[in-house]
Image 1 (cartoon, helix red, strand yellow):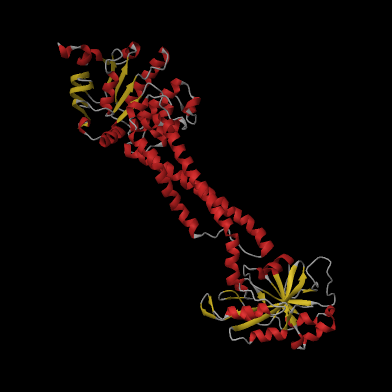
Image 2 (cartoon, chains in turn purple, brown; image 1 turned 120 degrees about the vertical axis):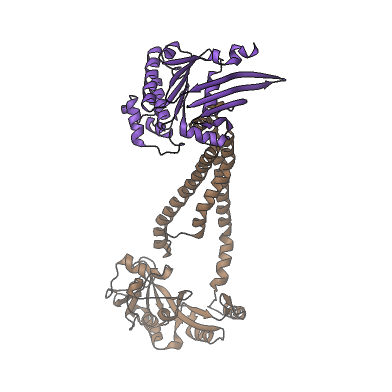
Length: 226
Length: 340
């Protein structure tokens, strides 16, 4: 089992009231699976990814990844764990502007336990169709190309889990579809599990599995109150 | 006339109990733009141009030849020999005076028999002939030429005196009385470098203080500039730092990166001042040497230079501490989607 989530809750205090924004009694995911998480805005999809990445701690419950309870780790250990096992692809283009495409990819392994291999970075960029753009700065790349650099950066450290938050959000339909296909292909080749949060139905259809987060999150569906 | 100091008076001064040794000299001649000084025989064997340092003709030290044995033999300082292309065995005719157009002793040929090893002092830029040969120069007339054989009638320009010390660096207190006596006499004056130089430094000391003040101001401004640059960089790079955190960088790593950047910026700033400074010394040293004979090496590393490196690193770390702490506190999630 790659991910095991139990009694996961995220609550915020608003004055005297406690507002629960996420409530998942149980959720599991096997290694190397690929799943699309769909749902309307505000359903807690991104919060869920942040919990899985260890960037956010739950108010209660547990998140276990690779048999390690990251929800009980210190922030320092969670950062290190993320550096080794989890990659994150964002909707907004988060490449370092002063670095070439190749350097941005190498950066992906800078905080992991292993050494960043230049050959592996070059191979990933070739695989993502950017062989001729390795030395280019992000400002010289199109949005689609920048997102492909982000995919290569996510895979360079050979993670167990890739989290993608609206990876097609900045792309048109055609490019979005090709981006999802590429992401699925490279994750499959490296046996990395993939969780993609999206509200793009085309993207959801491209996945063998999907889940409606509005249903899974009891805090959003209102099931907890029933 | 050779000088204002009577030989008899010089001999009298030499007999003073606080005077250990004297070396007479006569100036006023030149060759190829360099001074030709007539010096007493002890000049090359007993005179110390620096404490414990005597002139050398050893090849290992950069010298050649030997001391003058006859009155028609001369010795060249290292710099004068180099610039005039003097070789052992060459002869020259001294000019009676130091200005262009002054008469030349055309019939007096003096041979170079020695070239002194470099001393890094003004002596490198002079030519030395024996005292006796000065009086014997043809153009000086019979009154001066007689001085070659009749010591008591001689006159000299001056003399180096070695005075009695009570300990290293401290002259005997009785020297003041000797100085008073000589300065009260007609035609002579005693100058003690150990007394004059501090007074000179006091006069020009304000320049040193001013330069130090300017350096401190520049340092202060550099610190402020570095601090504000780091803070501005931090504001601009909040998203980059958040990205590092999302990629797995710990808060400590981010703190260390900022501190390293600050320390390295400070270090490179120090090197960017230090290296051109030494290059400038290298360029200026050539001209200073030509003008004064003093030798400054651009490769000389002072203790201040050595301390500057760790000091710059430490300063960089101190200045970078607050920006690094701010970076440490930045939240990854709150900054990852922020526009710069």
